[in-house]
Length: 121
Image 1 (spheres, rainbow, N blue to C red):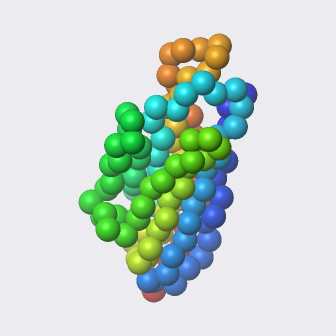
Image 2 (image 1 turned 90 degrees about the vertical axis):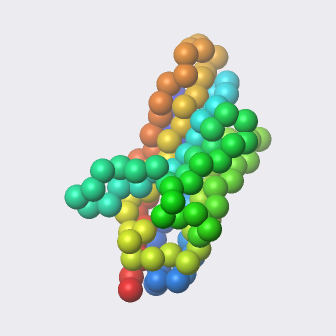
């Protein structure tokens, strides 16, 4: 049973920082794609940042220069360092992974349960 568990969300003032973590556990063969999405109230879920094939990274324009995605492959853990936070960054942040397992070589999509990030003005 594969699980993605996020942590690190919370309440922070505008201009502050938070670091999110996402630990993938279970029987995992490879994680070719892993990233962060967010969903604000009344809005669609959107990509924040991701690792794609190899070590290529992709960021939403709204977070470029403020957020940094990183990963520890040995621990199957993904991070999101968020600096200079703004009230508009307030959302539930979800970890996403497209991964394979020993019993299934077809990559499947997994989501974490989400962690709330609230930025006060």
